[in-house]
Length: 116
Image (cartoon, rainbow, N blue to C red):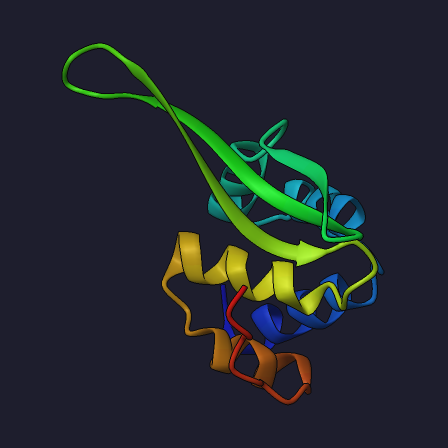
């Protein structure tokens, strides 16, 4: 995918307003790698209330060497937060794009995440 196409995609994703809509758009991408990466995430997000906030987490279950399943949960964003948080996480996870660079392509200012 060319740089301009990637920038246009990232900007379109940021206009989606929420994680489910952005994920849906990613799954429809003409770029097979992006579409496959997005499809692999289906069913892996959970919403949980923590300290009065609706938080969105990415959840995976992996089997360790002893055959025991282990659950891994990673905080992505709060419901209602700017979807750039998910977009930057997605491109960092699957395509090793720095989050700062994704924000720049989206025309947004990157801020270091707060510790939770």
